[in-house]
Length: 221
Ligand SMILES: O=C(CO)[C@H](O)[C@H](O)COP(=O)(O)O
View 1 (cartoon, rainbow, N blue to C red):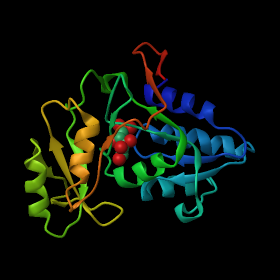
View 2: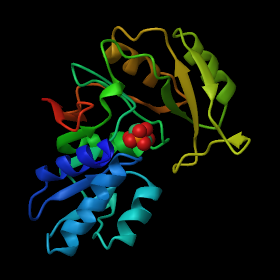
View 3: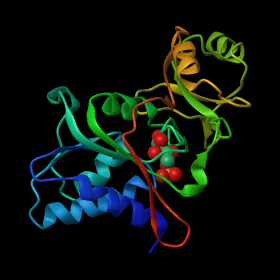
View 4: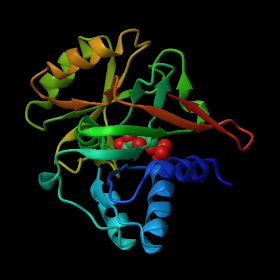
């Protein structure tokens, strides 16, 4: 089985009847959502909360009942992907540009499950550039302030234009050498006025599920 499908389907074992479920974004979360669609078709009663417009469309196409975020106080379980993770379950997320909604949903989630290739595991975060969502207003000032934190920031582009998030903002991908203190860096980036949110998810994940390269499951809890 495709490793993304293996970990995606494994994560759905945490979903139980009646739960409110956060639906992640990306090619790994896709397999979890496909499985949830099958579970709903077979009679499971859950309600989903999507972390992006793309995920909302996918969930609707599978007839997964959805809640509007304004109706939700707590989410029982969220299943989402990641771009990098360490052994303390700190993450870099936002490769798909959905980090703001993903982090809001993670922040109200009781049990946050991350599904990711084993290759995304590392000792120290920083190989993957940290995606940072910034306001279009005064973007040059914001990027200079990010640079002052020791990174090489780069505006994300799509089809030759600046990438626009679901919230009508831009993304800058900030490449640091090594992120020795992700908690401190997360706070420093968010203290910049033009930063809406950044892709460091510190102390949020409860469980990381990955594949061992031979069809087996590895878990960090
Ligand atoms: O954070 C994300 C989107 O904003 C994704 O979860 C992350 O980029 C991983 O995606 P994939 O499973 O396709 O590798």
